[in-house]
Length: 258
Image 1: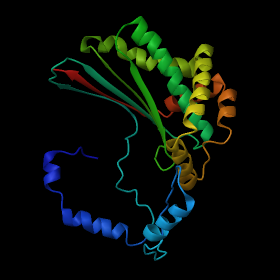
Image 2: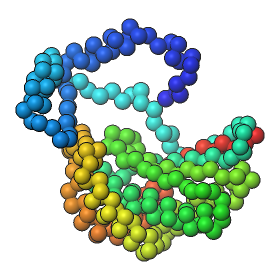
Image 3: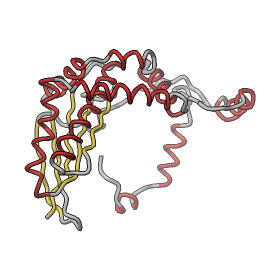
Image 4: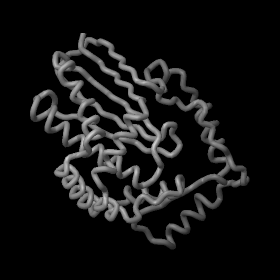
């Protein structure tokens, strides 16, 4: 997917935008509508009848065409480029992709791996080496993606320390794959996730996330969540790290200062 630039915006056709809008709302047969929040049911019912129920429905069911969706290429590669910057920095992004079971437990294993790895980076890269303010770790698990799991590690550092710090980034993930996360890290993550659940489970955003997964993926990410957190073992997190590395799909993109 190309980034949006001024030249792209100049090619936008407002007539085509209106055509697409009319096309999408010409058939509500495939619509899924979720309404979450504090509302008066009778008043909401009136609005639903007025604005949603009157939309046309031809009962024509569309099929998703994902042939034009860009995919992360396979294999292992490093791509470096140089760019003039006002403040010299090494901007590093490392992307692992792998196929894992699409389950709430796999999602939780990835979350534990993300957080245990973040703790390891804080100790090794930030505190011990003083090489960066922090290393960002994140993941996505999407049923439709191929592969369905993406694990991302990114950080900024002094360009002169890139060769010193970058091997540590890879080594910490391998350490978890080889030996499992530290017991102290597992305990911290469990305490945090249990506390966080109590805070987010009263928000609309959380239940929107849960309901959409039930509708789109037929998967309940809320059921027995705290029980799964308490029962998560270091060996589970270790095996997830092993799956990610065993896929041998890793791309590093690094921008260095001129």
